[in-house]
Image (cartoon, rainbow, N blue to C red; front, side, top):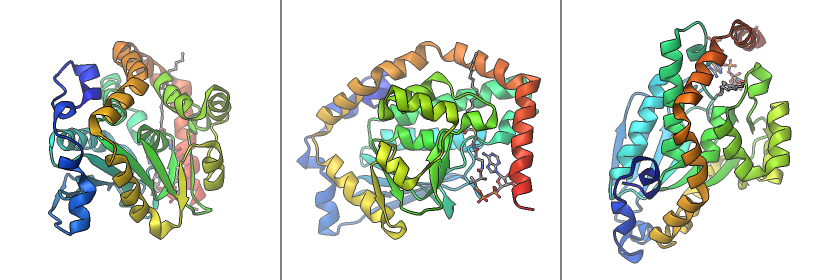
Amino acid sequence: MAALTLLRRGSAPARLLSGTLNARNPCIGATQGCHLRRHFSNNKILVELDEASGVAIMKLNNPPVNSLSLELLTEFCITIEKLEMDRSCRGVILTSAAPKIFSAGLDITEMCGKSAEHYAAFWRAVQELWLTLYGSNMVTIAAINGTSPAAGCLMAMCCDFRIMADNPKYTIGLNETQLGIVAPFWFKDTMTNILGHRLTEQSLQLGQMYTTPEALKIGLVDQLVPEDKVQSTAAAVICNWLAVPAHARQITKSMMRKQNIERLVNHREADIDNFVNFIGKDSIQKSLQVYMDRLKQRKQ
Ligand SMILES: CCCCCCCCCCCCC/C=C/C(=O)SCCNC(=O)CCNC(=O)[C@H](O)C(C)(C)COP(=O)(O)OP(=O)(O)OC[C@H]1O[C@@H](n2cnc3c(N)ncnc32)[C@H](O)[C@@H]1OP(=O)(O)O
């Protein structure tokens, strides 16, 4: 069980204690060409695990725009936890199977016209995704091969490193205020740790979506590469990260993220109550409906 997962669940960090670096250095087997690939998929997530390198490529597969439905969120968490428990997996490249879209963020239809029980279950699943990905002990690299608003951006921000396709049409950011909704404190905390307080405040208030050069400039993404180099760059970058002694890297990651994780863990139920009350308000439902109508009208 992961060290960061330990933070919130109190279980033993078996992975943390296991093996020395070179005994399990993923890039050694990979360069020797002994590739054992395992494919598995749920409905909405495709996984290819290369046992030689210890790297899993995890593709979001919910056409047309990879919106994060309750079903996808659930499958996402199950997949990460399964990989976390798999001793042959040490790193994940998170990417999209959809052309031009990394993820459109939360599925807005899950937040419209549903019961309070549904909203609570949905929000718990969103929290779980964040806790599982942000708290993962594995190296996580976001290979952002398309536009990535709101919770799509959050997923990318949960990763250790972000590589984005340098396409002038792609944008990334937390645009919640543009929908008339508010990013919760743990979205804000995640962004603050990357951009700092001032830029996050501005970014969140404006619901700013950044072009790729802007995102690179402010540090929201770490590297821009041509579209056809996103996956190969992610594979190279993850090898570098995996070459660091695992226990030292994991403890460091835990040290950097612990406070944010504990904050949500300690306020999880209150955060769900807030969400349910907030999203159920008539004014918020109306804003979301207007936003969805506008999305549909753009096409006409
Ligand atoms: C006291 C204070 C308390 C505070 C308490 C806080 C509580 C918490 C509050 C709530 C917090 C919620 C946090 C929310 C996070 C989110 O992630 S919200 C989602 C934000 N996402 C977006 O804004 C993206 C919207 N989509 C787009 O901009 C575009 O679709 C796209 C992604 C750029 C793709 O464009 P294009 O390729 O042109 O495709 P489209 O034709 O636009 O879309 C195809 C169909 O998909 C539908 N769709 C798109 N996005 C979504 C979505 N996010 N959810 C559901 N459905 C989506 C779109 O409508 C099209 O549908 P059809 O017309 O039926 O084909």
